[in-house]
Image (tube, rainbow, N blue to C red; front, side, top):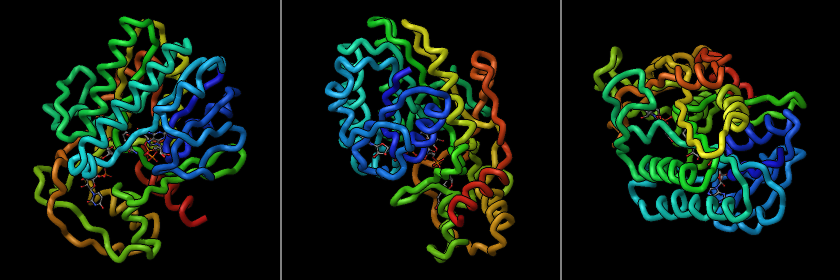
Length: 321
Ligand SMILES: NC(=O)c1ccc[n+]([C@@H]2O[C@H](COP(=O)([O-])OP(=O)(O)OC[C@H]3O[C@@H](n4cnc5c(N)ncnc54)[C@H](O)[C@@H]3O)[C@@H](O)[C@H]2O)c1
Ligand SMILES: O=c1ccn([C@@H]2O[C@H](COP(=O)(O)OP(=O)(O)O[C@H]3O[C@H](CO)[C@H](O)[C@H](O)[C@H]3O)[C@@H](O)[C@H]2O)c(=O)[nH]1
């Protein structure tokens, strides 16, 4: 297939683009480099520097079979401070992309949705049928795109899949030896921030809260290895059916507390990793753990690397090699 990968210069999009190339597909990356890096675009992919609002010029008459859509603003805190930017980029940008697809006759899309569409969970593990009450504009814009995809599938015959990622971690080494790793600036995610202390680029890890109703008082999250997550996109694109919008959670199904993550990082790096207790971060639910049963049942996906130690070790070796 000939595929457009929006956001393919970012952490997740670059790995998925690499895996699609490995599987023999033709890939063009569309990325405005607002948070991504041109040198993350895999060798062999075409690259257009630009916004998803200009997707029409790329798609028109070019024979694309599908779009894999990662391009988005994705910082919860920034979305609270500047919701307009999130509605404009995430919902407005995606509407422009969907219209460009409709006009160019491109019939399949796989979309990066998020656990943040659910908000505070009513039960654990979380299922796709659970209520969606996002607690941030970021989660709300992603949910609005999910809803729009349902409508485009029903009214315009689009084949759409939303993958609701939980906490993506680790690094990917492609068969050609190239290493893809997380490079956000600012970095808000826990594992890269903990590893930055071991690397010496941060003095200590600010731990946001230790008074949550969990066994050790710190938040619990469901980490999924970037290689496992990326593989799900290939299955999802193959399974897209015109007129149907499917939604799948993507997590490993096991929760680890922030303290357990820090302990795993100490073990992998051999560094004591000093921690400074900080106030809770607004909007952080105590526990987010996925039920990934639906994608296991319907697409046959299951994680090969659910072990937290492996994710941390892969992230660490990508940082230090
Ligand atoms: N990292 C996670 O744990 C996580 C969890 C849930 C969902 N997601 C979603 O996955 C996707 C990828 O996340 P990531 O961690 O790789 O982020 P990232 O910031 O590394 O990648 C996003 C890419 O999109 C590009 N981009 C942003 N807006 C654009 C626009 N308007 N036009 C063209 N390109 C644009 C950026 O330059 C960047 O290369 C996002 O949609 C994010 O919301 C990520
Ligand atoms: O320096 C840090 C960074 C994070 N944390 C804590 O570590 C946990 C995980 O935080 P992350 O920022 O790594 O991940 P989130 O669970 O907040 O968010 C991620 O997963 C969400 C869904 O679960 C959304 O999809 C979101 O886009 C994605 O970044 C939270 O308790 C957070 O407060 C710290 O204590 N210190």
